[in-house]
Length: 438
Image 1 (cartoon, one colour):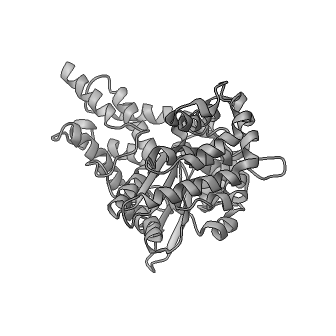
Image 2 (spheres, rainbow, N blue to C red):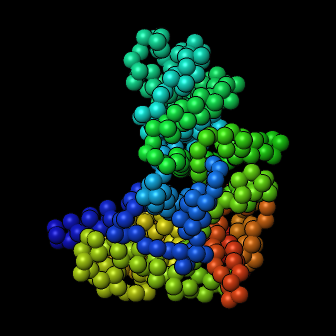
């Protein structure tokens, strides 16, 4: 019994839902065939490699779909091609997704460039900070003059500013108010710093910044109908594109399908989107290739723990029970990880996992999705369930952002790309939804 509980503990930790896979991970599964054939290497890296000028690209997808894993693959590929890549997940140390503005992103880029381009002369950025220090030192809760600090300590003040923007709501707006009028001069200072840094990179190397986790910025709609997403990615597009290097920013999927979509195309070209793994067809039939891919994702992680453990007899009591869990994930990787952890936790310390345990995990996951749906949104969900299409309004965008609506892509027999939408399978079991559909 003790051995089995130890096995379950190791299995539980094989399905960590919030950790992206590192490049070369043995549990990585290539999902291109069931995701509309998209690939970050083809879709993003080639633009960088072929372009004579700096590129600025957007990468979108549902939160938890696997974008960070793909971007880390992209980072490794570019580094093999001799690019110098500065990758950071902004949510971890720099921004608060519940309240983010453009200045927060610019400061985050500044901080990470300073940390990565060690050989570049930081003086332009330190001079910019000194020009603002009289206003900022009170907000940084220090009376020390910047000149009296050692070089490393001066540089660290950028990290302190981003930390306060992320964690201290009372200071967030005050810091932005001091920085916003000077963002153009900050970009000039960054570009001078980047220019010096490029000269000190290996011969022929180019610089790429990948700012991840910006897709988690919660939409805040103003009375005039415009959102913080509009302000960051449209109003500030010139500044986002203004850094003297290649840049990739993640972007909320709801923004891609907003009324700003034409402007995004003009400013950045079409954003690349990572869709769900297709587990059903638009007609509601099981898509076996997609379900098989989900099974492989589970199997690879299980085999890393115990190589002779069979999914269909040792881990689950039957193939039907396993496939039910695969289908209920909707092809959403993080939801799959969460469901797997829940069924392992509820297995009662023994295997195989029963149909009853899987149903209990599904019911619990369904409750959290039900809570995210507003009363007036149930009809919208029922409409999408029938039409497999979305409309361009805020209700649909909110449901995309909250992952209640999922995007899928496939290529038809004529080779045409088909994009369609469906309600998350967990929501389909909610009574309010079923009554409207019937």
